[in-house]
Length: 210
Image (cartoon, rainbow, N blue to C red; front, side):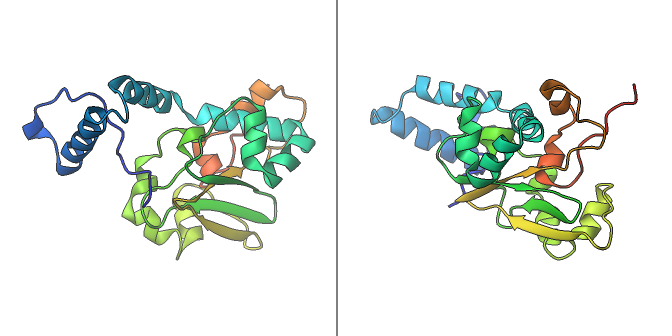
């Protein structure tokens, strides 16, 4: 089963009558696990807080380091989990993660055709469009058309590779480094890296002219 359904839960504060089937199911399972002593309410609270703290800034930090440090980028492409851990980022053990690099010749873009598998430990919660049937179904049959709708028009000679994220495998796209940014600091570079560029539907931001 894919683990990225909206199954995280806070203590129930709404009227149970207003909850949908899946919310009631999550609360029932959570209550049963607590009753059996397998987890505690504090375990749930900490897990939710940890996931809520994840955001694309973590991924941007990884990409910026890869742009600045070719040796780190090589390690990231060879062993993404190990390289990410070097930066003190724990992405958990739910699934493996692979880093891929966008270049002048090859452009990677990520989709989950089955539901919404996504590297949440590194990028936070996925955007709504990533979970939509429209994106999931069309990206695999017309990737250039979908990318055009995001404002990304690739040259005809660029190879587009669509990566299908699964319960066992997640992907981090290293967008191409914008021209003229070689002297920027790692923090400055990180500000150019967006969530969408790490999914592959856009490029990294172009720095403002100074």
